[in-house]
Image 1 (cartoon, rainbow, N blue to C red):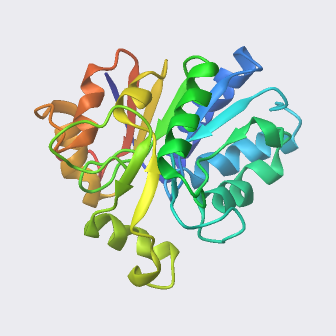
Image 2 (image 1 turned 120 degrees about the vertical axis):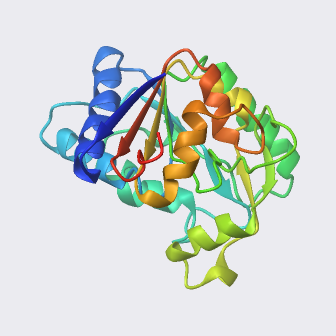
Length: 241
């Protein structure tokens, strides 16, 4: 495990974007695992600028998103599909058929989870996967639990996750209560993992991820078992390391 502490969000975003861009430049059909939320926005901005400056192409790249809310279609401004299209996909030359995000409006969630998992397996390992981390140590939407859920699955979101994500909605009541997310084994199958963390509110989770007991009560702690993970934080998120 490599831990890199940067001075600010801009430096984190620049370094994270370098990891993504380097993978695509080295392998033009790279398979990417991508997150949503506020933390990766700076990274996506830099990647888009690199594309606009004609320094890179994503024509053969394949992407898999970590998760999606159940009940939101791709046209909902609150869906992760909409988020990714707005902040990344509509600005680069990635093919629509190469973009994979769980279908939040499926009539059969269990079957959607199975099919999504199979799509990932068909492409082989993700070459690089980016993660954020919740205050409670969740990665993707894998919430603290009594066990590690291995594969893509439906999850009931905890109240603190709903509260944290309510900033993207009108209020907490508008946040869906369930989601589809990659499981822990799926996440660990990625060849390279980059975890991004900013802010003092993440300091406890980051510390326990790096040097705490491996427990499903703090899902990110399982990352200690991955053989190629880099954690990039700012000074606030690194306070308890």
